[in-house]
Length: 402
Image 1 (tube, rainbow, N blue to C red):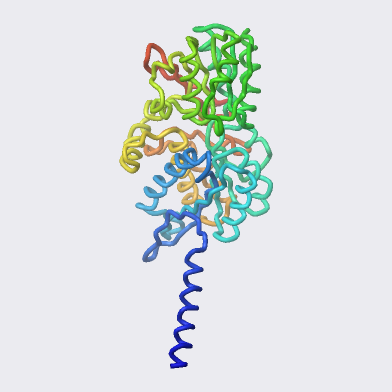
Image 2 (tube, rainbow, N blue to C red):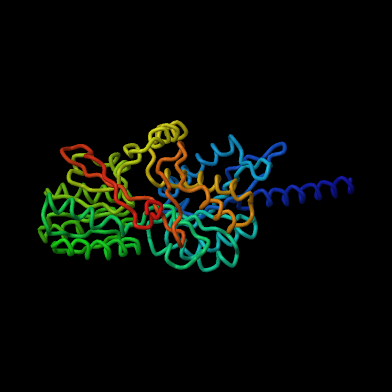
């Protein structure tokens, strides 16, 4: 009986230890497990998966996951060996310090040669040590300063916002008037956009009549801020932050009787805002062209594949740009013939540009010095209750046409 009791106690201890190990926090992974002779290359992601930026992070990772699915269906061929991508995702809740902690873990624990990060704060944080730790940053941010730090292992995946203010300003100013009120998000990104917007507006002869920043991630009722801006009798409102709260700012402006136009920061996507407010409320808004209207051979097929995977959801640029650049990364790895050396992988990516694979939504002319995007900007204006003709904004960083 004593022996049986001892074995029973030992068995319970083993079960408790195993149970404790099973409850250990683990990152989200896209790899169900490679089989046969297929090898695995780990690619990292640090971004918001919870908190106020969770929906944004979900849009980003859905694009990455779709690309990984399609890449793995065919397999990466690297020096005659077949690989699959395992995308390891860690939550940083949009916080730069957590992004840095995640990146160090991704590099040391999972040996990721490449890490995707979808916010400028995180990108800047990673740039403090990525060259020393030898990993490539894939930064989804339109903050152009990311590509001007001198970091040799950074790729900026989307067009810098600095291309937009003057072009957008002219379009709405010609139609509505020269008085502009700003109601931007109070984040650093909103401040940077405003700093570019104000001189662009004034350069065209316009005047700034109000500037009323607000935290788009915390506020629910924007009436106070909108009322303050409208009291200055503006012709145009500059608004923007995450799509859903931006839609509510516009809705409240209309409810308070505003009849003018809007300039939308590139963070706000009208295809997402359409689910919150009617297109008629967006009359006179100039903004990024929705992905599903973008004029390229790959845009519509991408939208259909995305909708098929995600139950009819319409993708925004967060999804498509991350999809496109994961595809570019895969081609770069194959071209480099290397799955561990970040510098060689970046060389491979540069070598396969201009990249205009029929699966991607937007042509990638190349990767500029400092890792900057060469992709042109895009815009569209909502007129008479519908989308007008989209327009392209040349990117000075595109040296392929010179």
